[in-house]
Image 1: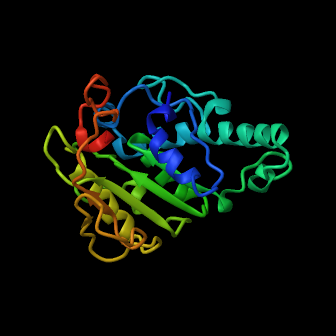
Image 2 (image 1 turned 60 degrees about the horizontal axis):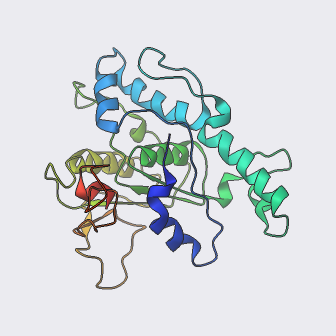
Length: 252
């Protein structure tokens, strides 16, 4: 399953301004994106297989039983958000959680900004495509790669998005130990821009903000990349943290 406890710094930063913030744990594929891409490359419909991974995480189901386990709709992204927001409203009725859902619990996506990291960024991107969100943040992704496919193969990122305001960020170094998936991310970002339906447009050249300390950056009109090194307390394998990620630029 997803592990929001690994992203407490981001969650704290977002919530520090008073924004209602949820770090969602949900049932997800028990394999990283590079493995998922390989799994799907064995299918005759590789591109649809990549899409199915996102659909199942968001809505639940059993779309590829020979590749990954089924997902109970209650443990999907939509299922958990629906039940969690209703729980928060019932438990903390004065905090206004009910403004994010209908009376029957249906999430009001247009009032939510959805952010995802790694495989979660692909889920956030697909959700932004299918529903009109207030915005979406894609961290270190999407990493969908159609291995063995013809260059003109149509992927889900080539379809129009219902969400306009989308931003993306990744590590700037494509070396094996930093962020080797960066070329795939840039390809996906370009495909998204080519739809003409999001805040990026034209030829995408990610803005390298270095260490991100020089001032304000317009993250809504261009993906950004950073040379920031992994901190010792990151989940990228810093001192005392093991090798939970193995890619310093991916999990820093």
